[in-house]
Length: 125
Image 1 (cartoon, helix red, strand yellow):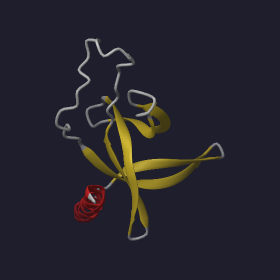
Image 2 (image 1 turned 90 degrees about the vertical axis):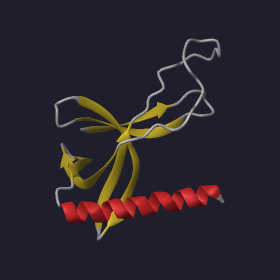
Image 3 (image 1 turned 135 degrees about the vertical axis):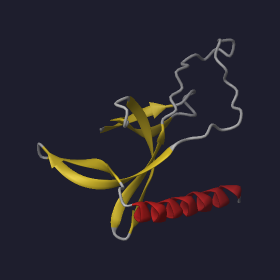
């Protein structure tokens, strides 16, 4: 896996810098994930990764063949991974490892759900 900051989005006003991770799923397929947020739990650092949504349409013409309207948000798969700091060739790197302890994973899911709910409540204000 590696992390690469990339500009995502449509118009220049909508562009934002996002961390993208390329990895391999359990079936050996290459997947592109986006860092949603980092958080700490019991002194350990974790990351929430979601499916990356890349807008391939670079057109500025509203008459193109692509659907530019945003309907209901798509369901996004989220993954919680443990962040481990490593060093490779003198450069600090982050390695994302799966959380294998099911009880810990359940607690982390609760923390993330509460965090997202708090963000949503803040955005509603």
